Image (tube, rainbow, N blue to C red; front, side, top):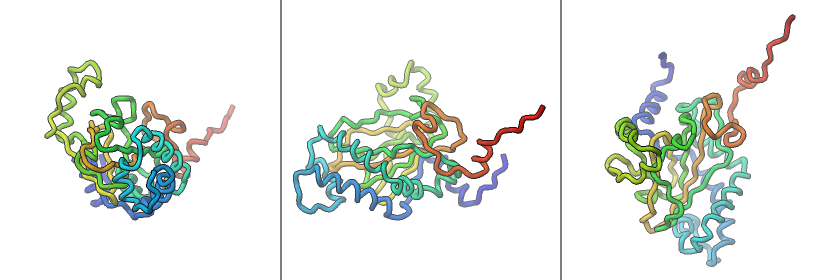
Amino acid sequence: MENFLTKSENKISNQFEKKGYLIFKSRNNLLYKEFEKIIKFLLIKKIKNKKKILFNYLLNNFHQFIDKRDINSIRLEIIKKINLSKKIRYLYFLNTKDFLYNLVGNELVMQNKINLSIQLPEDDSSLLALHSDTWSGDSPFEIVVWFPLVDCLKTKSMYLLRSSKLSNFNKKIKKFNNFNQINNKKKNLKDFVWLKVKKGETLIFNQNIPHGNVINKEKTTRWSFNCRFKSIFSPYGDKKIGEFFKPISMRKMSEIGINYKLPKIK
């Protein structure tokens, strides 16, 4: 196969293939500021303490201000609000555009709704057991963009199987009858890497590689957004264009080709 990528493009591609993920400094703080504007407005109405609170402090210590039984309804309200903002969706894409164009291509679809995870300390209601998104029918051509609003370290983050261990892992799981049985097996933690993603950084990762999280044992709350992107013309899994994905960067010749009809002759 011929490779006409630049030296820098090949470097990024090789790093992503080797590690299964990349962590990089966010393009600017515009996306964070837009999230802050919406979230802070909604949260101030929810919490009991009406004193002026710094946004970063409010997020990290959110568990001190609310009843954890309300967490999912608050999360869903935030998701609804942020996805009404075309500016946020554009900035989310723009923040990772160069990496997406490099790793996925320049004709993309984006998940219809940016998702939000809020994980309180010692709360087991937002756990994601070890999984690969493809195990439940997702396309192997999707990439996940993960944007934290706070420092996500140790158990406040997520873990990912080391790429070097993937081939051996896949051989071992052949003996299981279903993917749920994998989680009942004790994991060798040395085979996994805890991703350290700080506020002001962005994570992109290969969702085909097994990953998950555990109960947050840190003293602060995790806030992270996630959104999937894929090439518009790559095969789809259970999540289809229109119902889950929306085109965001189709090129004119592709549009012309899709709408083209061969003239009829006798």
